[in-house]
Image 1 (tube, helix red, strand yellow):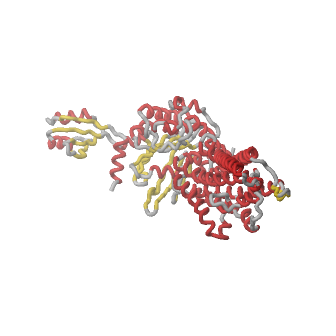
Image 2 (cartoon, rainbow over the protein chains, first blue to last red):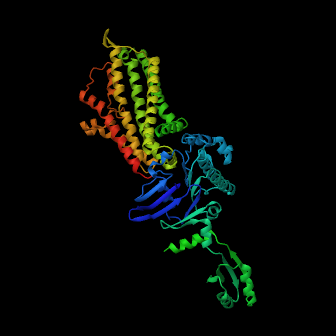
Image 3 (cartoon, chains in turn orange, brown):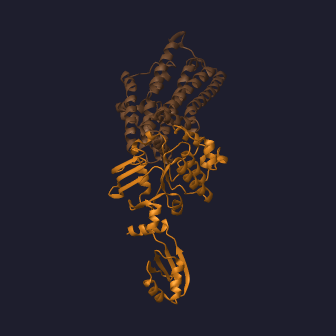
Length: 302
Length: 285
């Protein structure tokens, strides 16, 4: 049974459709990233999945439970939200002890998770006195007390410093590897998602525009090269005769953007030089999630 | 352990570590104590003045019975408790929704209905502890500052101590009955409001508005639970008890009003609680 199945999910506010026939499946043990522009429906999707708001139609099954009955999962599902959602008058330790009450079988002690997230020295601090980064660490610490099978994280990297981001990435990787915990991560931080996700779903205007494994997605997105030369016409003629090379455009700064498939930057440079075209700058742009995301987002934008 | 027990434990965990719950438990007793001290201080001054002027001691014999002050202390404390508990009930859910902590409960272990039920139980526990403390403080302080006695006039016992105690018991019983309905009302406002600030101001505003307008509503006010609560403009039976135990014979009590006092608050609680459950199941968290 998949960790999460969403079929034909629709949600609208009045006549404005926020989510439009959304389908998504997250397998157990996978790390699934959910990306999209602001207002693309990420948070609404997560809130519908978690039963925090009703949806118009469709079905959602989280670990076999409907969203309105998630409490019956008894802690197998944990969510960490964009805002830390902590009681401001409790200390870090009290917050964790409170979260412990919600775990049917706690797997770690409060001390252990404090150490894991580097918040031991703030143990007696009220959460209202913590920085945003440490509030987020405390929020994540709550999730680690039990043994969740699915963790939903909405913007988990917001407010974290570089060390904090590394800690969270490491935690996600180790939990996923050692306990096969599935993750659904919603974030704008595409380079981080690229590091840890096994799958990515790109949400555009309330629809899943693309949903595949990272490897497959990057394969679909070829590398590109950006080069600058004074001999634009000559260079264009050379490029037209090369196979696996396509001139995409010349930007207003005079850079030629070239899509390449099966050719490396050195070979391209060599071909140009052999045809007496002098290249003043050459930049290889590797296929990345960011490139793909920008392509998808620009396709859907009005 | 089922969700309701988890929810109650989670509620109590926070209650024991936050100021609001302590305020509800302590404030009514503390304010009643302050009131009794101030009255005693004023009375001592008046007595000194009378002694100097050689005035009659007749009124003092009746007016200084500790039972009257005990009831006054209860009346003041319950007025404060009524306002605090409705505010806290209104604050409880809406605040946790504002900060987002209620989401964790719903996702991990607790159903929405269990959460509201746990809050209802928790607020009742707070009210019970607060009333017990108020009773103890008012009783012992009144006994220390004055003397408990029957009402005696010209050597004749007008009202025995047993009769006084029975009246106080009835007055207290009738004054306590609206408190669960006040909690239910606060919870209903809490789940309906958009924010904690809105919830508290609405709940207190409506409670005070009922207090102001109940005089204008005439007989209709007897169908509103809040009319029977000790309040700033007090029409509760406890207010009449305060006069009865001081030996005033002009207290008129309508038996129908007592019956309504007995039977209106419970259905009000059920109505508010059912509506709160219905709304909380449907609203965005």
